[in-house]
Amino acid sequence: MDADRSRILADRVAAWAVGTGIGLMAMMLTWLIGNRLASLAWDPPVGPTVALLAAIAVGVTATSLAGVRLDRSLRR
Image 1: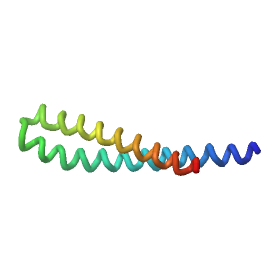
Image 2: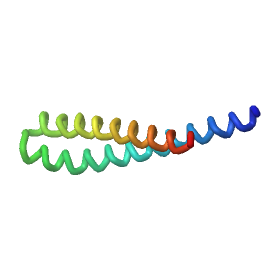
Image 3: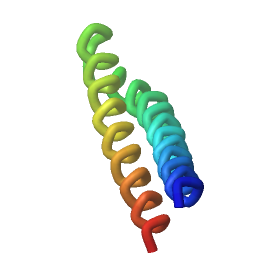
Image 4: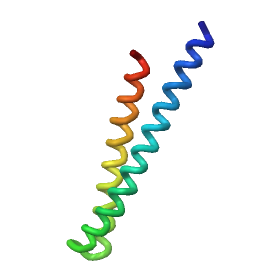
């Protein structure tokens, strides 16, 4: 029984690790594209800051959604 619980816990940790990777990739893509577009709209101190905040928001959202979705798929 304890080995089964250990396997489930390991699978949940792996699901959240994959979700974190997905969130980091989404953050990088948002930062690259957002920084280029924000630099066209705002001067240097404001543009990169707006792009970074948007990238962080997208990354956290993608991590949360992917982690929850993968974790729920393990519970079935």
